[in-house]
Length: 346
Image (cartoon, rainbow, N blue to C red; front, side):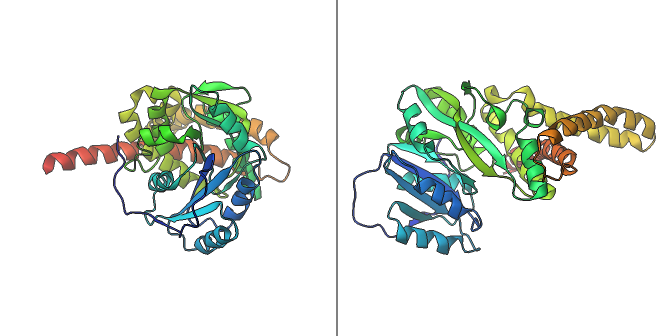
C-alpha cells in the first residue's frame, strides 16, 4: 500500500558522515514551540543507546522552526527535516526517508519520555517476533480544565477498551500509540499511508500485525499533554472519528464494538432531538439513560482527578469525546460516499 506522493522534504545540511545510530527517534512537529524543548530534552537525555533524533517541521510559524535549527546546531544528534505538507503521515514518511537507525521510536512533540524509555523499547523489539511495541499514553494537563480532561482520558470509564490509556499489565493489542518498530519493517510496509489523514497510526498498525504481534508494555509510559479546553478536545475527537470509516473500510477486522458505540449514540441523540419537537417527555426519557451514565462516570472520574482540577469540566469532556467522535464518524462516512459519487460521475 504505497503512500501518496508529496513534495520532496528538505533536510537541514548534513554534517560529516558518521556511523549509523542504533535508534532513530522520530518527532513530527507543527507549531509546538511551547512543548518541543521539553520533548527534545527528554529524548536527548536517554542513556544506553546510540541515537539520532529526526524532527520533521511541518511548516511551523510560531518559532518552532528556529528553535529546532538552534537545537540541531548545538547537538549533532538532532536532524531537522522540513516537510511543507501539513500532514502527520507525510511527516512520518519524511522522517523514515532520513532515518539511519536499526530501530525507530516515535515520540509526540507535546510529550516527554522518562529515562530508560528508548532502551527498554529497543530491548523488547530485540527479543524478535514483535512487529511493534508501545506503552501507556499517560494524559497530563497544565490547567485546571486540562487536568480534568487528563483524568477523563486516563479512565477506563471514558476510553473503554483503549488499553494504552489505562493498562497496567503487559498484553498483546491491536494498536500502540507512538510505537517503536524495526525500521526495516516500516520501510517494507512503505511507511504511513498519506491518504489517511487521521487514524494513520491505527491503519499502519493493522498492516504491521501481518508481520508479528503488537506488544503493550506498561513500563513504557509517555507523558502526553492534553488539549486544554473542551472546545479543542471536541475538535480533536471529531477529527479522530472522521478518519475512522476510511480505516475501517480497509481493515474491517480492526473494528470493535467500542468503535461503533459513539456513532450509535449520535444517531440515538439525533432521533431524540427529532422527537422532542412534539413529545419532549419521550425525548427526555430516551436521553435520560445516557445522561445518568455520564453523571455516574463523572462522579467516579472526578474522585481520581487532582485537587486543582476543575471537576465541573469532567462531564463536558466525556460528552465532547463521545459525541465528537461519533459525529466525526458520520462525517467520515459522508466523505466516503461523496468520493464514490464523484468517481462515478467522472
